[in-house]
Length: 442
Image 1 (tube, rainbow, N blue to C red):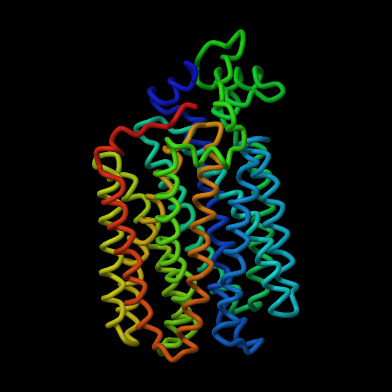
Image 2 (image 1 turned 120 degrees about the horizontal axis):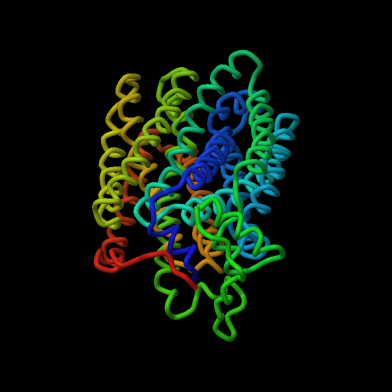
């Protein structure tokens, strides 16, 4: 695309690149708290409103539905107006949804506001994931994107610890209010420290693009450009970014990444959304159940980082498939723990480590499949399709519980989902193909 793009890919990382990635990680920390706040408050909300399993499943799914719509409908706008403006807009949406959730007076009001919160989060996740990928060099790109999931897990961990304290002092409404205020505070962080994507500026060349590119050139310790490079020529009939995902050269990759996201998120969001409640139903206290859920995120901090480091040395499909299969084994073992608190803590750490690593691996893979002009669209739609699985899994689990399934039996059933994903990945995306993948330039 340009020498600047090659410099980012090939030369050592500069400080401002790491800062940009760090801001994206912080955004994902906030998202991790905002997404899982419903799981942490599930028992308290159920107690106050006497919810059935299906009704609680609806509340858990509402935020995920909003995230799906945000990824599908808002994320493509990042390829039109820029990654940074869309992130700012989505922070306003998710912060508003969180604050108003603290004032909700019925399950339906809370469900609608969870949808609004999820709408903003969906746009943030896709856009920040793309920026982290675009500002990392080729060597550390996998780690940079995996750190996004680390931020998500870290935010869920710290948010869970904060939720435990807030629940014991001021009730579940204070958890939503705190999350909303933190989300609004992140707007200042983005305004100060998050630059617009270099790839977007070079590909779309919006107003003042030359000046903005030159500002980035200075920060890359490169000479200023006298003129922008020629914009990439689009193939006739492919101006719609969503339709371009189905071009012959991208169709197989698009369908595969969609299916993998769907399966992994189906299993992952069952684990993250229902574990605190299911542990409580198995005989643990409410605080012990929430603590068990927090440990899933603690394990995820290490899992996402571990996958990123391993992907720098080994083929990503093999690492990712291994994480999927180990997750399945851990879920099967989890069905045997009964009401043992210590066993739940240990297994929670391990399941969190490997299941979060699965999501991190998909986030690392998806930006590599698409060019700059459709990258946010491609990643957003992959995440959005994945949210379909995330939306279904809590509701399916709630219906299974209402149908007489024992809480821990559900984990054995959901283990099969990770096995299926691993087999699809190894069969449909051979290692020799991924070893040659680099960020597309078109």
